Image 1 (cartoon, one colour):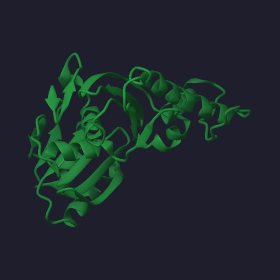
Image 2: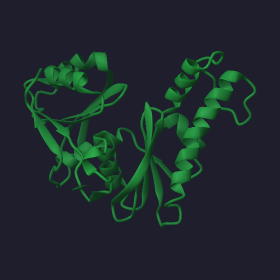
Image 3: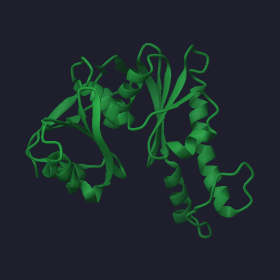
Length: 251
């Protein structure tokens, strides 16, 4: 099975068989056609399951690249794999956040703060009963830096380093943006901090920069969205697949 996470900046992918991960990688949106090579390299692949927050153009490019392989896009549902969706409108929850919640639940059965640090950073609360209580969406650390560069006259797109006491502009911007990320995560973790076995699960391209700043119980997990898709689609897990929507037609 081919797993796909079409995010705002990249397409993450993996080929799995049962519980084994045979290959994985990441592509830019403009490199979507290279998925054709990955599918050809694994002739046993019979199904593709994915999340897409990158829009219809990227979805169409992916479908064309892997055709005629059946492609199913995840839609958020009210319940799946031990997770209850507490959004006011469950269908409005981003499919990537839904998959990440399910992936986190499969990794940690206790209360959990599910953080994905990418182009945007999402910070979602999952209680011990598997109920998604709600969460935050904020600009990711790099997007914060780009916003400062694009909307101020004198500030650059900073390429500095994190420092506790920044004394150069680039370092001050980078440190400020990383502290903003960490502060949002740590404030949300307070909501579950007193619960036994409370844990923060951290994933995404910005996870490595954020992790050293977090003073809380932490478990970094790569490709959490893909892990959730694997659970949903039954790759090594006994589960149904509510919310999967079949798309076999290419554009």
